[in-house]
Length: 382
Image (cartoon, rainbow, N blue to C red; front, side, top):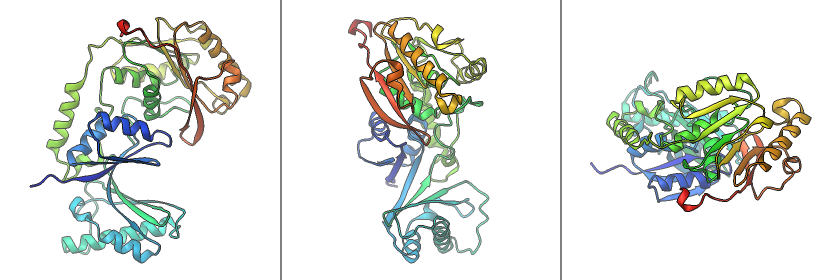
């Protein structure tokens, strides 16, 4: 049997498409197209396993079932029915339909979902010769996206988003998604031979994500995925991909990762996450204010998400914390600092302009990643 080639889509938060593409390239995928919110690449069913396990910054991995123009419900129905749904969905598969519509004549999302569901059922009837489907088996979430009168139909291989790594049970206020934390770490030029510190560590997300990068731990290793129960993505494929990921772990790499927070509850939550992720000995946590935080070592990187007005319910307090962060950074020779914040006056309160800025979205909140670039460690230090 010839290997099945698929069009796969790694979805990306706005502004992180290039980072997701870089991750795919590092995993060995070269045939890809980068668009708004997604990177489309070519692979086989086994690549569904690999990318779900390894992608740190993508939200989910989808199969692109088809794309076509649809300005009427008839066109949407016929275009959907022409696709190979029964190749993927067994006769007992559960297949809910989700939808979005933007700048399209077919603007009613519930109506689009209904038409797509009907078309898939009709296609399944033809293949399975039955009028009724129990939908009590594995889950195959179909999504229809209408954009500029074109329909994109996908199957979601992931299930709960890839940010759900499995180590974070409790969360503190306004947490940063694990995928976003991993992206910021990749932008920060941090590497395992450099110290890393987060003075507003909250639930410890930056620290755990850094440790996972440092030890080359596939972020999806501790969780399950919808496609684990699909006939075309076999148990053997998943076993091989997991084995490859386990073999790639480098837990002999020394790590210098620490964090602090003024909120004792945050430290408790962070300790639980650090322990669950298996880094209780590697990550040091302290209950301290930013003013008392004293990162140790040379050529380190501060990566942080300072509390802001909306989180603190006190704008003045948020400004004061940014000032304290700026003052602490003055004391650190040869360190770099990366802070994500929605505060428009961040640089004013920090008392120094960033070397670089990058627009990112923490959920729906528009933020800037303020980048203060210290020197890289000397070559013999690496």
